[in-house]
Length: 145
Image (cartoon, rainbow, N blue to C red; front, top):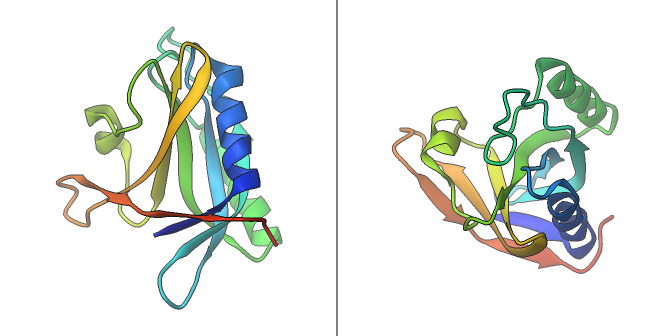
């Protein structure tokens, strides 16, 4: 289960629309509560570093950007708990490519962007055996702390 405030959801939606027709990407920083709910405290946009002309359906987070996100999380006494990216003109469900590059535990938020307008936002977690994703319920919080 993922707790995501309206304000942070809006940031992800705006990022998806701004990157269109390419994929946006970013890191979810937060914490896991005692009930196992991942609480997103910050959605940090990252420049899609993909340079092979595939940005319209692939994204890349460089090791340097990942390190900066980890450092930001640590400074906030939080952790990287997931990632987000957009699917331009495609559903907000993980692709085979997404599955091949995902790791268990993390939440993978996907926003579909249809003709430049953000649509359905979903969250997914890769099973421990890496066989498939399961969709996570998103709890929409009114505001962030």
